[in-house]
Length: 365
Ligand SMILES: [Zn+2]
Image 1 (cartoon, helix red, strand yellow):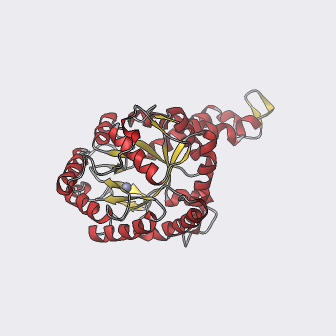
Image 2 (tube, helix red, strand yellow):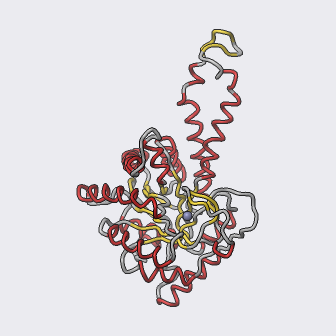
Image 3 (tube, rainbow, N blue to C red):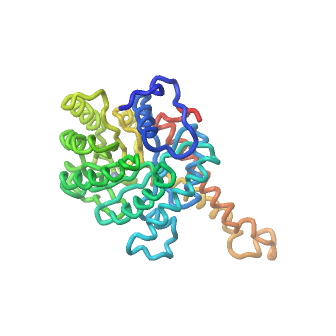
């Protein structure tokens, strides 16, 4: 990892706006050094994006804002044809420009990322990268900080070969690549692993070393390794979380390749529903990013459900409520009222995530 003056400071100083290139590597190095990780929240439109920016402001920490392929499609509007990923590409660009415009106004640093991209969705990332190359030519920095490729369904060597190809293209834009090794349980973005054999749910340290050997010479990368984590929240059951797998992988690469301690930046997928103790342990082994989606979806929806239940008698027609048959309901009907409750619910849940991940108040900007 990069040395740099930041690592021994009590808190890291950052500029508002999107963090890219070597600044992102320094941020991840600081996270490992100070044993904290950043929440990565999936956004699907301006409301969820703005709630994420507000959470970063309240937590005084940078936030990772990410778009999945289906989230980006939703950002563009589900009205559009997406047969060639055109809506997902346009939605990703729109989301990135939205966040870039408002991050400065909210005064917060943001890491802009795209989430899971399985083999069949690669045309989506291809299109976003083409836009990223145009953006880089004009602005000298990439549109997104990083992209993720999830080729964990493919054999290891095929996974890493595709990742190497993409990282070669992305390194020219000073971008970081997130990869996935091993199978994360549950169901996400159309990939259903809920019935997979339990032994496959744990990544081996030798696979992590292989990824290091293939990708480290090419550019900056992070690894989503499976250690019994599950996409989505399910009743506790057959799969046990084993964070020490991350520790063993770090130590194996350190020993075999004679690196410094914790040579890898790990990503915790399927963080929703984990206990604070499990999160703290994973972070201590070099997790610098934890994805959070289901928990924030619930936080958003829960507040709106509460409102709809409480105001039900005011939501039966435009006129007429318990106060009188011709009383207007305009104030209750206005979506700005209840959508903002959802935004506040999501922001509050993300502030909790910053605390769970040890990142609350560890930065200055
Ligand atoms: Zn994953």
